[in-house]
Image 1 (cartoon, rainbow, N blue to C red):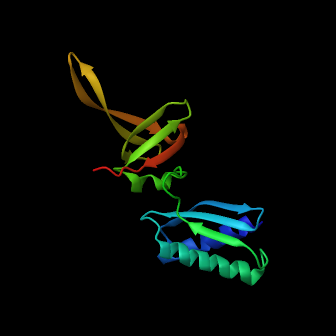
Image 2: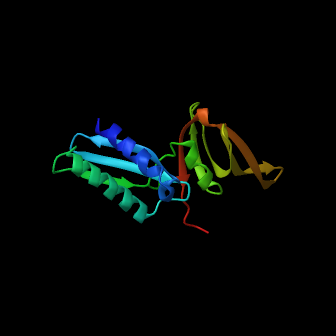
Image 3: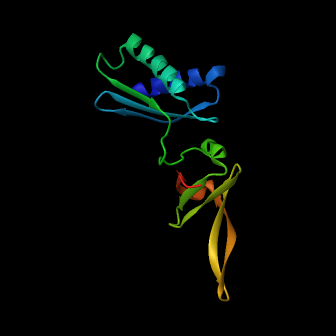
Length: 159
C-alpha cells in the first residue's frame, strides 16, 4: 500500500521539469518501517537531487501519517556494483566496461559501444595466437535485452 502511494508521488515529482530526467529503479518497503528508494537519471543523480526527493517524500509520509513517528527513508542512486535494471540506464554507460551474464549462462565482459531498443553491443578485446605470435582482436557481441540476466558496470581505476 505505502509502495503504491510513494510510486504515485514519485511519478508526480518526475513530471516536474527539474526532475524530468529522473526515473525510479526500485522501491522497497521493509517490515522494520524502512523504505529504500533507488532512483537514476539520464545525466546521473546528484546528492542534492536525492535530498530533494527524500524531503518531498518525507513531507507526504509525515503529513499523512503513513508510517507513524519512527521510520527510515533512504533515497539514493544505484551504487557501483548494482545491476542495471532498465533499458534507460544503458545509454549513459556507453564507453564503459560492462559484465553481462546471459540467461544461457555465458558471461561477456566488454566495452558498451551501442544501445538500441532491442539490444546492446559490447566490444571485447582478446588475445589470440597466430603462428608463434599473439595478436589482439576485437570481438563484437550483440546481446538482446531479453537475453540479459544481469549487467554490471565494471569500474576501472587504472589508466
